[in-house]
Amino acid sequence: MKIKRIGVAAIALAAAGALTLSGCTSGGADPSAPAGDATAVITTNGSEPQNPLIPTNTNEVGGGKILDAIFAGLVYYDAKGAAHNDVAESIETDDAQTYTIKLKADQKFTNGEPVTANSFVDAWNYGADTANEQLSQYFFESIKGFSYEESVPELPGLTVVDDTTFTVELNQPESDFPLRLGYSAFYPLPESAFEDLATFGENPVGNGTYMLDGEGAWKHNEKIDLVVNPDYDGPRQAANGGLDIIFYASQDAAYADLQGGNLDVLDAIPDSALATFQDEFGDRSVTQAAAIFQSFTIPARLPHFSGEEGNLRRQAISMAINRDEITDVIFAGTRTPAHDFTSPVIDGYSEDIPGSEVLDYNPEEAKKLWAQADAIAPWDGTFKIAYNADGGHQAWVDAVANGLKNDLGIDAAGDPYPTFAEARTKITDRTIQTAFRSGWQADYPALFNFLGPLYGTGAGSNDGDYSNPEVDTLLKEGLAETDIAAANEKFQAAQEILFQDLPAVPLWYSTVNGAWSEVVNDVEFGWNSVPLYYQVTKSE
Image (tube, rainbow, N blue to C red; front, side):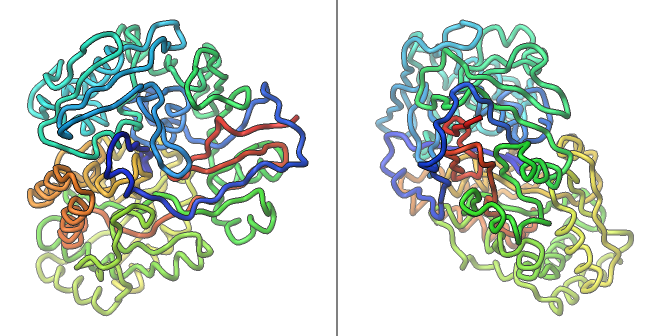
């Protein structure tokens, strides 16, 4: 999501073995600690979702964290990113183009409705139909019959065979299709959801490990209370009694609650504590690689940022950012300067893509490029970067702005929005008139997931409305490869073009930096930075 979150699965796929993650550590159980209380509720940090909780219309981390707790998809991802069946009994294909999906029997939603093949097909059809304007519509683009141009209420590529079986026919062979099916866009919906989806989104009925704790469980801009779903019989059984996700106004406030014993698990350490939190929490802390990419986006619709002038200015701005200094001084080495548009923990990552030198700090070249742009049209105004003030971004935004002032001689400043939801709304409805913080928390462990959803023409998370036919072609060709190495070559070629166009300015890769209180054990952070809440135990 956005940052965004996502997850992915590898099922009955030879290429899946190549998808590896590295650098994962976890805080294991303290053998001297008291046994966990199966009724104890775990408290953790989160953010107010941007939209009502409809899976196909949620593409940011605040809502995604909740959806992943209350829904079960065809597959789920373990701590290292490996996929395992959840609702699916099997996912099979002979040609990587037509997939047969069988569901486990006797699965239920929390309102008692059965989870059937129609639960998935109806939800996917709704998400794919352009008339419904779902943010995750892009994820269904590969299915036969999909269209951005006209409403297609029922995709011909989706066929219900019986109550527990359906088939998916794609437009072309795509070997990584099963990898996507753990992402929230592919979650099922009960039949009752379609009676009033707006109302459903405020009190969603899922089929996962947890469920909302009755009416009023979602207290907007405050928290959401989840309890264990007694009918869930899948592999992610809860070792606790529930999950309270608190929407903090700042990371510093969340950290203070952790220090004071008022929060159990924190997955976002504020800048002010990055240099000290490991000393304070010791083996109750973690710093590990995660599939998170940070950037900021400069839409081409902004004055001075279209055509040749825009490309020159983007390259100049990128070269005026001292990524090494910022990651060292502000983030205390908990970030790594970016070398591409993906993540080092993803198979196929490379630091040697032609054009990537645009990410090197080079103030002299930056000045030259900016002057060339001024020769086309003189710069005026202030360059602003919008960000959400509740996410711990002010320090780096101010550092980038100061660098642009010093190296390019222009006015530059941060443009804070109080909450993530407010910033995302302005971004998605295209009313924002500045550059803005962007980033990606992977949906599934593959290079394409960092590229297609963000830079493909018309993609749901392409917030800068970038479009390049050459990039689109390379992404499509990469998906069609049945060999992961051959696919990655296409995706790297696409990145060569992205380095020329810079639809987003890559900044750094994130680690997940977290800590937990003395009363919880079995805390493990996943490959995509989200704690595996269902396995956390608590003694009270």
